Image (cartoon, rainbow, N blue to C red):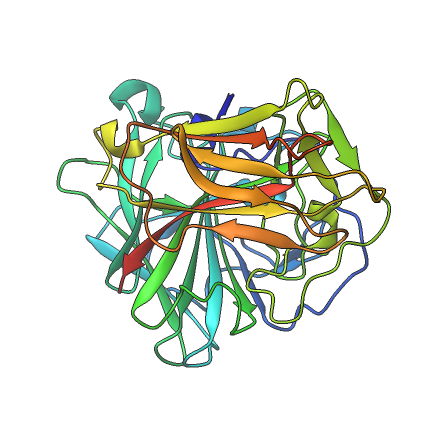
Length: 372
């Protein structure tokens, strides 16, 4: 089993980022390089980033310390906007369209921007991130050089979306931010995101990807970030395009579904992953009620006698039985209600007696639904 503990604190942006595919429409993207003094284009995705002056009029601009800048650091993390004054400082992201869904992403790297070496001197930096008045996440910066990334999906209640950074009463940390992004989504995607509920993401994982690289725009037209993770030594891949069903609730990109983790063989037919709850974290604002979306696609053209069929177990109890992934089409299993609370959340995939092929899994999303 493989743990997601490192993912639950945010995604570490790594050096070996490679993105492949054709350039798509950027018209509905808002991409802010916080603290920067000029506009730029991302060297990998080609996404244009603007300064934050038109979105906020408080805070001060800083560069991270030079010893934290190298070729592995995405350029948006070289500067930050800090908010030493005031308990609440808000970005106003417009234009937005009332009733439309938006993916929001905020990135943070301390990089000793203030010269105080605060993480080492005072422990983790803690402050809160809000969508309007609603809590999104507690930002917990425990490593000076890590890039922490938090994602959410929210429905716009007007012609703008507010993202606010607020101080916590239990911390003296001044909020800061490195980047802020907003991506318009198709209204049918992620149907649990409504005007009264928003989604907070804890992990988005691409299984079976052998390269040490993330997948995002332009492979994913909505610029979701998919981080690779290895849970088995064996993988399946295909060069064939994996298509989405009509009215697909999630529209995973083909680049993610073209790889899958697979159990070693039918005799060793169990594989899985787990994560530990954040409720034990002293900075947590829990309790956390998790939802999970498991993504599958059959990548082998099976003969008439071959069967890939497996049961999904959650903490040793049958969660979904006799599942067979569709061939070169996106399939998924999701939790319609929150998972029962545990200190550890364990998912396992066991081949059924009918199976001649071992279980596979292509990707997974872990999230929490919050009330607006």
